[in-house]
Image (cartoon, rainbow, N blue to C red; front, side, top):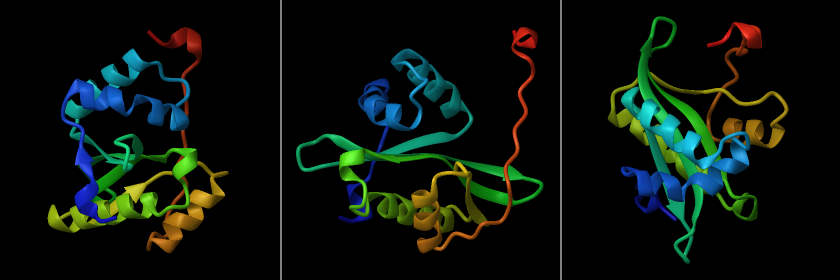
Length: 149
């Protein structure tokens, strides 16, 4: 399979078709929240691409955005990368990563960045095999629940 097999989600229907796949990665999202977040993120330059199998089922996807930061400069940032469990190990993640690496170059970005869960060892191996380096630790802080609006 080549990167020509990758399709861009451009409409609400395209995004809805990706929902069950994304539930694998983000099980806390319901369909309406997923669609609402995609609409908002799209305003922030988020893009969603996906791959279908021979039966037309969406089996892998990547969500990413182009941005500029003080630390990294002009980068492509990979927010989401997922394949159906039944289709893992078939090179779909690597296919999407190659597409994103090509996009990084095509768009004139300095780097391609991503965060990954610290226990996702298979994902770490895949990223390293695909030319990524471990360059930082990502930290997060949440305000107390009663202080959020």
